[in-house]
Image 1 (cartoon, one colour):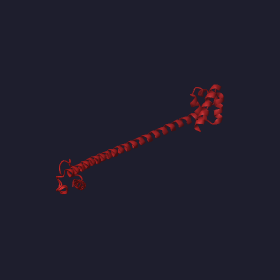
Image 2: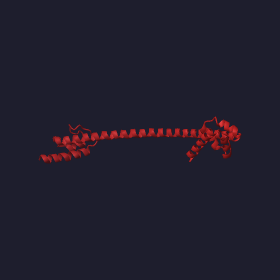
Image 3: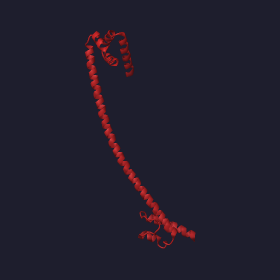
Image 4: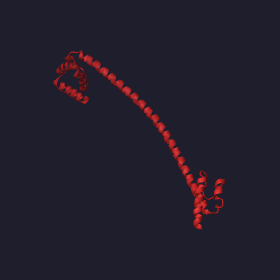
Length: 179
């Protein structure tokens, strides 16, 4: 009989749990609403049924809290994702500004070098060689590489041999780097 009573209490508890979802109870008192009370009618004196109902309600309350915590975390994640997207767009804008500034600076440098090339192209080779001897070798090599080859050769021929070797080394390294 005790075994039959336990099985009945378990079945009743499951039925009660299904019927009373959302009704918190600490498990020490029988349910107070009509639907659950009707399910426990006549079983309120069976401690196993009351205990099972209380355990199921406790689990339900725990699951509800867990789901609420998940909902809060999801909201936090959505908020963080929105902030990250905003920051990403801000960084992309800054990257574009920097890219444009770099391109503008490179364009200005190229224009300056083109102007210098035109100046050196119009000079006599001996005068250009005297000035290039005082320039940093990498800068002088850049100018020589942009001059037409005949003018560049005349200028290099007018430079001291040691300086000519340094300039041609820079020119060769620059050409190798371009490939």
